[in-house]
Length: 354
Image (cartoon, rainbow, N blue to C red; front, side):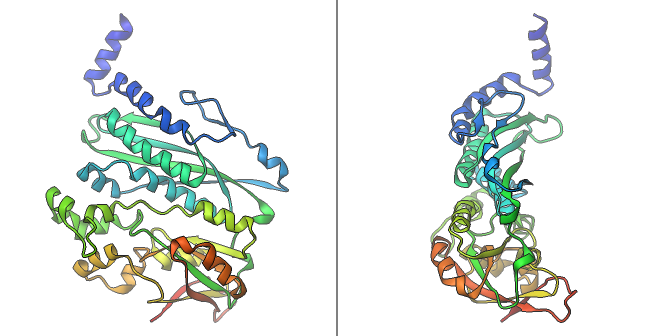
């Protein structure tokens, strides 16, 4: 009886334990659909268990971790009632980061906070997380759902997570092998991915009613909300297969917040710069649509959005054709090259050729 009274009091305070139990049941199949042979146990434990037996074949295995969230793109999911794609964004933001070391993603955990727990909405969000995990080849081994009554509005939610992967130190990717004359290949993005939405909302969607947001169409015929919520591409499995095939990848960069300008330089050593040829790739219609309204300076755009390039690969010129063919599904194209900087001590930077 005491437990029932306590639960009733907790529910009156805004936390529904029964709803939480229903949500766990609702996501069980989606979570288990991501399991690999290395997962030990199932949903419901105090910790997710994962075997790293594959490390026994490595010379110097390193665990690689990355954490991120979806950001204010979530507000558009809430306004439109489309909840099953932002989980893909969440996995992409983490898994695309750790693959930059050459690491294979092993497992993922998510954290979902809501003003009021709605099992049906939870199920849709986790459906997306599970889809992202399957696409990245990693297992969703755990997570947390929390109600925050009084600190979040009833329909508000936030979503974050982290990914752990593994790489053999001798096979790590990084700036060390990059040389002047190397080519830079760009892989297409699906649109804004999950970056710059505070600006998108400020300039565009905050000025629209919910009806306008969900009915406006681009010239292509695609609904505006569909283009805005298009999930972030996950480049993990094609990149891992390219590394396995030894196609000559030297370094890579995940083009997220800060755009090409502030991410590609992270793949460059001291004394080398990247020169990017503007106009060498197609800018997604949603980005053009936004800027037709925003009228933002090009330099600001390039430091805020990916501008249609979600991932960049640095390789020798001799390896370009093989990599373009391998990443054909992402409309891979050569977007620039690596150049010598004025001084060998100059940090790597990015310049643009128009």
